[in-house]
Image (cartoon, rainbow, N blue to C red; front, side):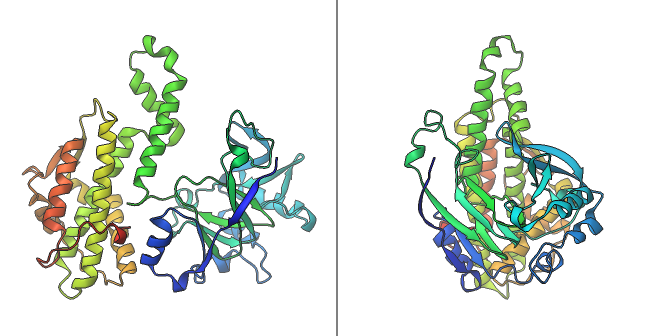
Length: 413
């Protein structure tokens, strides 16, 4: 079945694109874009690539050879993805080197497994090796990729019009992603990639205030599907809803309670940053006001999403999330989240990092919010988290006593 290509994805020089422009033109409109110039200083672009532009496979064998990875067998479909086989990185590299020939370079990892091509896909580099990377969207280290908006396993197969009604009428966008280019794939846009030569890329899924509702909608859709699959055993199941939530977590990676836990901690991290900002903004009032608007925007997005969850009964039977402020502020992972927020917004607005507030200062500021119990801990049900957000914005949304525009969502991130 042929597909109709309706146009190309825009390419821009990201060095000439401000963050606000990116927000207005692409992120707020949920439109794709290919960005050049952002990867010039990436260490991976030097360590992972030879001067002739070919992948430096020995680098991976030397540094990560013993790591066990899941490799996709591109010739065998399993459920909605390729079948996976496990091997070490060294074994994978050896097979790649043995089988890589120029005339066969039609996939990023063009090695044979029987008659099939193998593809080292979705290697969770940071999680598996404890390494830290600052990732943006999909960064292309070496090789060429063709990206298309897709909604089926392979858009070049014979696609069932019954299963995918209207597929023939779909109009596709196409682009060739060159070396050292980043593509922003918007929320809800399916895409299909064809590697035109040996290829290495870094991909990162993320959410922020602009696509938080997309994450919730995806979770809700997956929940409805998981529920439909087992609807016939409802009458004989002691805890049908619990089973639905367990299946949702197994299929999607989190259930409603997990997502609410993330929202609550993300909310608290933004409030902590507002507290720190208020203490450290004396010499940079304008920049810190913009950061405060970003943080307030995040809180407003969390508030909206929590209300959406509550409106469909997503937290029925949930007693809420217990947060002990003192213990949370001692949690290294939570402090890393706060530091990450500060670093990102400081970079966007060229705001120097302030002195880190002492634990006591932060506890005092947070306890100052009426919704926090006097002992510094609270069970946050949905309605209580909304109240907490409202009071945090009202008390901490301004800087140096000046009022700022908390409704300016276009400056959010």
